[in-house]
Image 1 (cartoon, rainbow, N blue to C red):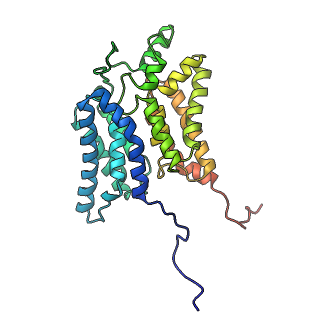
Image 2: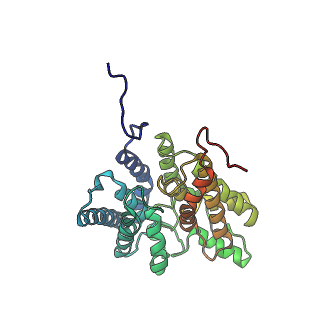
Length: 320
């Protein structure tokens, strides 16, 4: 009777598939995507459609041209395109997010070997590329469709930043309830904190992500801006609700490929990007900082992981 089954690694498998995980991420982003389309109108919907199509087509054509296995059905390109689209201003010319999608898929993902081999989050890399090369369009936020008199081009974080520089009350003209609901200028997917939290809770419920990175990241930013910014609860809450912090914490900082695998490493990583985000927001020239912080964290992830990986059982320490 054959009692042994000899096979190559891995010997521990999970029922979750890449496609299933990616579909869960897409489902989690639906509330904030839907809110963005309802608030900003058809232009936001077109940005989402064009960016997702550009990401998927780029992956398909590259893999076909390089005679590689076509993996578009795993939906990872859709996730990249959707995250990038939700980071776009609603009225941006459509060729810009399409260009960002091509950059993200080909230069950041496929040139390094495809899914699992990229050393940074492709969608974030695409956004940072566009922030540098198309800054005029990437920082032009419209208040059209908001239903109240808002300042075109000025997000709540920008208003607070300008007020602090002028020595006035940073909360003047900033409504916390509007921030929570999302009735403010900003990118398509970052404005509604409540929609993002619904998506984040879904990911936690489905165990696609753990709480460690999002909670530590957001808490670190909150503590930093309280100490070095304006010492008021309203100001800290506005910093948490405003901009892309919640979006980044749940959907970008938790990327499987570009974050440390060890639990201790994830906590250090979250603390690091939280400190960087607070530093950029309080002392930097811009009002944001989430994208650049996470990209830097991605680049340092291998170092963090190597320093926190546990020693193999029975391994001896270095000889003196």
